Structure formats: structure tokens, C-alpha cells
Image (cartoon, rainbow, N blue to C red):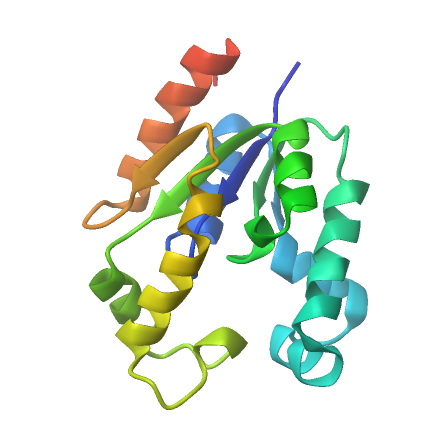
Length: 175
């Protein structure tokens, strides 16, 4: 059995970039939950938030996660807030190995400084303060992972290699 790898973590932690690299190295499919939502709805994340609100967006995430149940050979990059709902956390663990990626607030702010497609980062508060608030709120949910990797100062290759070692030891699958 080729257990999927599910990546959680805050915006800018490297979920999509590391996910693509992992999928390539393992010969798995790469699935980006936010991109799938955009494709399915024909709307940007900003537009879904603006027109339908965060609650409707989170409902759509849950529906998509449910639809992925039973899928093998997949690396899934979740949206940063997918872990907020308990139902989603249960689905993530049922799907496969849950890996949480994180980074220092200052590094996340650097990575996200030019992002205008992140509705939760909009506002008058300084970017670092907004990121710190979101991370503090979500920390208990991010902590509910099989492995946590701090990506601060690491290359994508370093993070992918660390995760692959854990995955092969934990899941008995050789890449």
C-alpha cells in the first residue's frame, strides 16, 4: 500500500513546493487542495471568501477531503486552515501520513510579503502580527500531526529528504 502524504501548515510554510518535489521523487500524484477548490468552483480563493464567506469555503474543503478518501500514491498539500475543523483532521489522518510544515513568523512574512491572494492576510495590522495571530490560533491543530518539520532556513530538498526518511521508516515504502 502506498500511503498518501498530507502536508499541513501555515501559508508560506512550503506545502505546495515541498509537495510537488515529494510527489515527483515518489512517483505519486500531487494534489493541491486550494487549487482543486479553485478548479472546481471556477473562482479564486479570494472570491470564494468574498462571495461565500469562510464557513462556506471550509465546507468545500471538507467535501473535497472526503472525496479523496481511499486514494493512494498521492501527496496532498492542504490549505493553511484546513486543520481548523475536527472533521477535517480526522479525514486527514484517515487519508494517510500527516506532516506539518512550519517556519518562523519572520520567515513566513518574508515569503508572503508579495502575496495578494491570501484573504486572511488582508488588513491594517502588520503582516508579521497577522501571521503570528493565525499561527497561535491554529497551533493546537497543527500539532496534531505524525511529524512536524520546521522549514526555516532549509531548502525544499532538505525538507523533502527529511520527510522521505520519516515516511520510508514509518510506512515501509521505499521511494
